[in-house]
Image (spheres, rainbow, N blue to C red):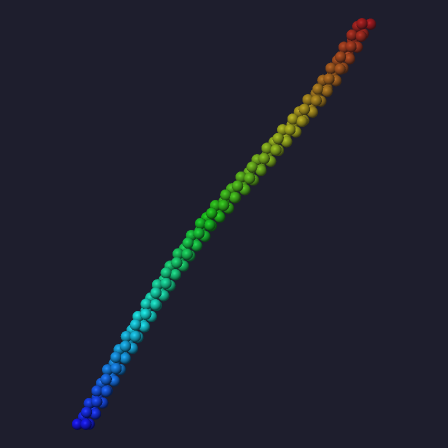
Length: 144
């Protein structure tokens, strides 16, 4: 009986040790599951944060491309306006040069006409003086 009692006690201790080990194993498995769940949650948050950052980056790049396109359009319009202004300025300068040349030609013609008129006037005055001198001479001869 004593051997049986010892065997029963040993068996009971063994069963208790197995039960404790099973409890510890179950607790360890639960702890492992919890750690994995936390790790999965953190990994999911990280992936979500990375996806949001990627979306923001894509949106930022798109906004940057749009702004560059708008800037290029404005710059092109500005260059076109400046080219048109330069063309208009060149045309105005050319028109001004032409007008000045015409004015100079007209002024030269006017001065030439005035010089010719002055010559004709001098010639007429000279002729008038000769005619008066001849008349005076004829009148003087008639008085003698």
